[in-house]
Length: 404
Image (tube, rainbow, N blue to C red; front, side, top):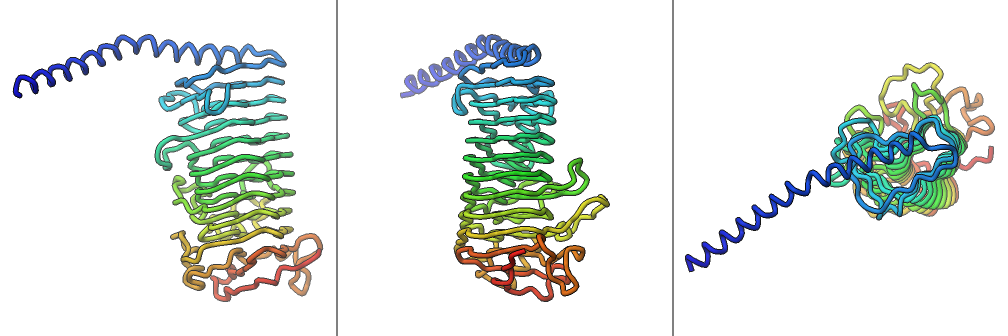
């Protein structure tokens, strides 16, 4: 028995030594191959002429630097499929993004995955005509504040199309469109992000046929201060499935999304001209839908041109459902509402703060500025009376029926 045990021990040691030797021998071959991949495709992006299609091969490739496409027109970067072409930035040492596209026109990104970028996964800036199709962004492992902020991140772009994409693990927003115009986000999925899908300070957006689940907040439509494009509007959110967004908020402290309560389905913050309809908003255990002014964030406003009030919002013909239970959020707002209503929290929360410039002498909305909430299944609404310290919080289920 002793001889057999000794023999097995020696055999195991020999196998480990052999594997170690093989790794040492193969590593020099692997590393140049990865460097060659990065150099090859960065060079193609630099030299690409109008109309070029850059084909990415099947496989998993490790990159250490941002891939950058600047000042180009009519370029397509195409992989073999989001599950077949995977660009891993887990060991990234240089650059703030995985892929960066700037100052271009008619750019198409399709058929690949970007994993574990040091910062944002794919950022596009100042692009006219940007398409993301069958693209996935992901941070592997347990979601946390160490993850990059944004998955798909078009900002200050015109003509944005996001179709059949996926976003996982962003510490801010998985699919984010900011300070942009003429936007479509459709057929996409977002989970395990702080915000699943976010439209911020953007004009003329349609967000439909998407699914957002197991985020902190499923969908956000925000107008924020101190940005180049000062206001958003004309945003339609419809035919989406927004459910079970009860994930703990893991945003870095100080980020605006760090104030989003866990358990939020849809949150509308200080923006105007929003229509929300034919969505299924299910089992978001703190706020099915929130309509709030920027004042409720308790953050100071230094931007004098910023309008912090929501108005001209229509929420109709949606399906609301929720399991009985206390809010999952531990933030002050969740605790206040939970204390008042226990396990029967109203689905739609309105902070009650109106812009006095948009009211007539009787305190009613002037034409075109009303907040309408009608024809929703299981409709229940609470006016938080946030302006007066929540003193007169009350149910107002049928008080938002206006036709102006």
